Image 1 (cartoon, rainbow, N blue to C red):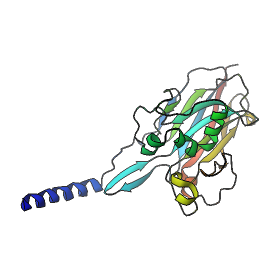
Image 2: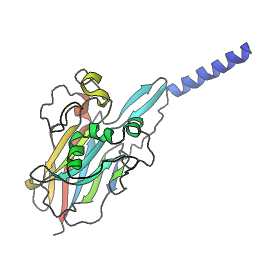
Image 3: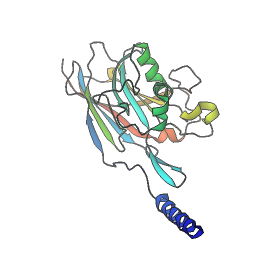
Length: 248
């Protein structure tokens, strides 16, 4: 029995050593294009997301290594800051839920990860994603692991004045935003905006970083002070909005 125990322990140790150098959740490093909507009442737009150095990172859980990607959401709003339509959100289909925090927290995950978008969506009367309210494939997919271009049409009769992107990598803590300052969420979400009124019927403009969404203890809003942020600022290298045509 003692010899068998030694053999089993040796096999376990060998297995752990092998796994220690393995990434458990492989990602596709290829650039991708995602077609969300093929037609609409408004302009055809494309949003190009160029990852920065901290977009894809790794974390270690014991001997295991996991890839960690951010989550983000894209929406339009009017001149009064009211959400008009959600264009895209990552990981909201709940079909193959691998994010333990998201599965456990449900709606709360989105409220704390995307405080600006979620508060505006709820003000509009929209239900946030959960296993009881999965979003369709026309709105969501797994977070792309590399450069991505989203293609869609604006499809609201109300006038959209800008497109916003809110991004967050849960658990991305630092000295300024640890557990006591922001719970499990790490550095708060960052908000990028592209002003549609800066361009005509076609063209390309960059998104600008306009602030962050606040901690889980603050009221959801766009806070312009970016003091205390570090790695979160390196998640996106560049964001560009391209208006392809105007169908009106």
